[in-house]
Image (cartoon, rainbow, N blue to C red; front, top):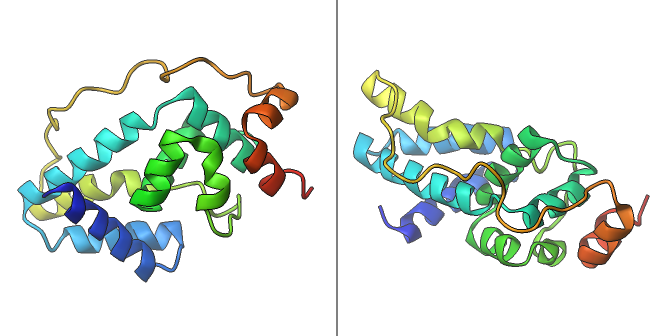
Length: 174
């Protein structure tokens, strides 16, 4: 499976789910069940490599602004959700997190930003197809700490300065 096919699967299942993250995960599992086990593992490798690449302080700060706070787990689920938003949103957000203000449509912090189930879709599909747990993917593990310079999430003025577009769009409305 190449990168284009990976993103096509992500996009088609997201569109069919009409933006509902839980429905997206269910549809993704259904779609992956149509593939052979090796292709499911290829999908998992694509997903995991993007998940690890998104492990940056800068993106965590953007998630903090969008979600009005983001624990370790919430940031993990946010990265899964971000992958689920498709290539343009994912790449734009990883490259320049404040740009998410323009890349995202409507955002409801009660529903959006949590793609935990998307992160398990390939594992679930592989297990259903084979009856066994997915093997090690053979890709480097995520770093112990996010890449980049740590961000003091409790410093509101720093967040306003670092994420001016996100702050204006998602926080000043309160």
